[in-house]
Image (tube, rainbow, N blue to C red; front, side):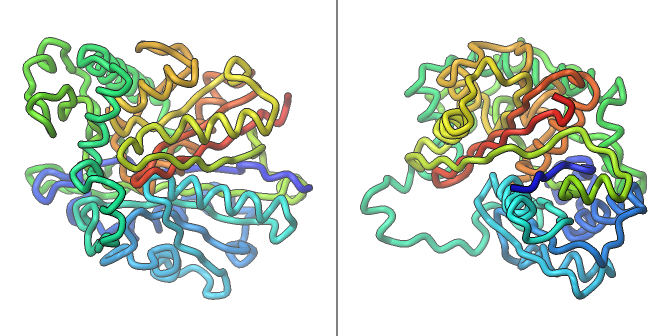
Length: 392
């Protein structure tokens, strides 16, 4: 079996998916993807785009501007027609699924160089746009419990996640993201893209828009529940509607060595996890358990965790169920903040988690051996991926 290494990973900043206030409100999603693709080749001039075997792109809602965006963005960017593509959906884990399929192809000898990416613009292609649910689905599941907010409330009740604990997680997510941003930790992964301030002034977007450096526990306590007036989930403890893209350059290890490229992490294993769609936020649990069981590792063997914070209730419930942590602040989980602060552009997030995990393990945790990225997805899809420091 060949080895697959991460040569590079980049992303755009994540911005509000808002028609008036979003910094990328007049930027199309393929433009964000193209910026990431171009950055990969500019940063790694040894790699000829013609030599890429295929581009795999994750996207949750493949319709409208995002219809087969994996192929159309590549062509719109002026990249070689000879390079194949595949647009993949697994809802929120789509970007991670794209990465894993590319990594497995390399390990099986089906190509030496792949690009894996993820993208979502939740303003221009809203959640569930053009979706038509199978009527038979609702013979088994209550349609009122399928929407994301409803699942977050159901998880909070089922796993006894208090509002205070959710708000504490949101506080630390924003605090860590703010500190990481100000320290320039994301600078190595964020590709500048021109956007617009709220007043229409053009500027280069180099920081995530959602981060709240002044977040207050007292202010969060006054907020009304967002989905159930008798519930505990608020806007502050929910990931916001976001736009963003991410891309990674994957390579067979000996090919990277031949080209003189550096790398820090190699892909080890990935696992999907399925679960009750009305408790979709818990899917990182079966995915991560399957991943660890198959690799003979335990929770304590993992040095760094990146778990997507779709909602504070579900991510906290997953961390507790897996035995990773009880409450924020966490020592080795989302060390530069999570989606409650950074945003969650659905199909992009799985790829973004890997980009950020790679950045963290190359810098703050450069002596760490293992890292895991995991996230839940709509309708009960989950995913988890394991990475290892090549020097360990």
